[in-house]
Figure (cartoon, rainbow, N blue to C red):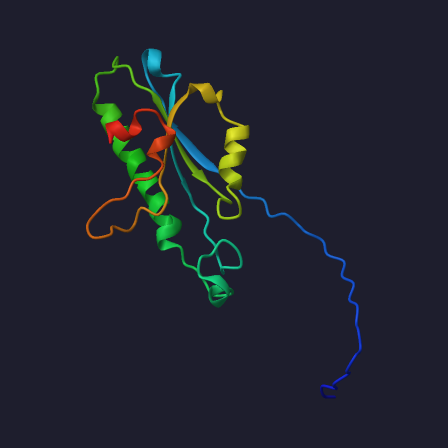
Length: 166
């Protein structure tokens, strides 16, 4: 048993493959609004999956394939930020006079985002309420790094008035 050189020999390989989809879930919670604004939703999202061993979705290329990509920034930081925001907003809502009108806040943690935005696409196709009741969505992705002490905010062009508000 060794390797034998077979010059000018062609080989054909036939493989039967079965793809078995892995199921996963988005996770969400609602901070209920009050009054006339209660039926409007602000969505605060993040994703809790990562690129795993870097076989897809990794920026490190072939050199990074098969090596663990821990994902502390992408996107444990966004997931944690979403949890902290939920706590802070719940505290702020509780401090308001009970009759103060306020929007409902939907906190969403998407899964399967690194494999093609699967979790967020599923939500858009299956929202808890019609999409026209969603006033705004803020997405927290890779919020764990500051560069030169500066916070970077992107995507503000997709919502009228958001860049002026910032």
